[in-house]
Image (cartoon, rainbow, N blue to C red; front, side, top):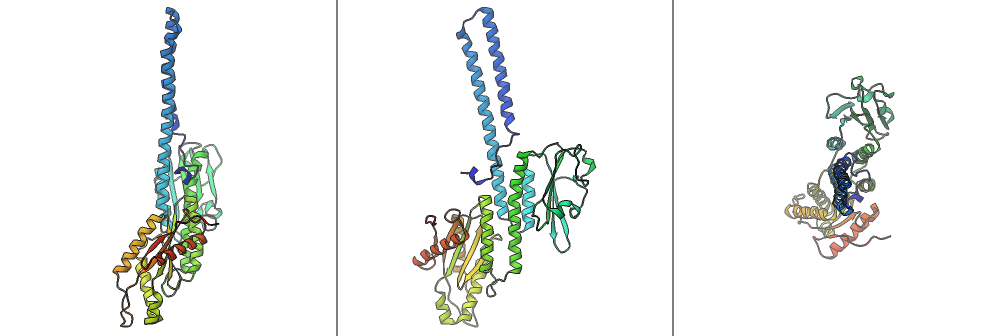
Length: 407
């Protein structure tokens, strides 16, 4: 199940396999030499065939041991690469800004068992166009400033297998003399704000397997970066709820679709929490709608303080709210619900125009992708059903949707 959650390229690299097979070959040749020595000795002393069996047995045993050792090396390498990729995805999902995502990508590329010099450039101030550089080397492979790079204008990627003997970009530093280089625009053609340059002192270092591994990291970063950009653009351009300052349903539709795309690619779960304030109508009827608006605003402030930077809270309508939790399964979502409950129960609503408002409770419905839902509308519908069940069981309750997938 673990491998099915990661791109096929995250597999044992070929650099680990020869260790086991070289050792096995050495052992086989050693014992084969012993075996042939037995043959010669047998011929000289006219020994019978039964005396060859120990040598045959030893040779076959050495062959099996060498093969098993090679397979064990491959399995160990595969587990390490999957663990590194899992950690990368988890950290990336917790990133809040584009800058966070670039830093996480850079730090994890450095951990790969490859002899690479990495230079990652990104614009951290769109107004001034100032570039920030992340690198593990003092000697860049390129003499051009990021804004002068052809990829900054055209997007795409560029690869040179042999700098010394192959025509290449004139910006590559002549001091390198040899080796290979790979450059790519991370953020996409429409919004070029970051460039990744990787240099290797070895020729033909960027073979299909190495490129597949690098692309596995780059593609998920690109999707998350564009998702974060969408998040902040919508935050500025799309109208938020005037009363609470939360996002509205227009934002929910776009953002939830993007989060499902990101979760599909990364294999990470996604959960939402549907919240309804218990007996809110009674507050409006008893104290008036302005007091009810005051309560909604205070309630929103309480809940937002319980969330992570990567989470998003939406006012769905009236006294109903939805929280989107990237990289979060149903179990962790329930823990967040309990944290919100405790915060609401322990926080007194401030007075409104000298009127003391009653303490409130809420009902919560939870649904998760891909456990039960496959689409955004399905995720919301299932959370709504879970909310209905929670309210059916009484105030201040929560419920996780556990029904089967509905066509």
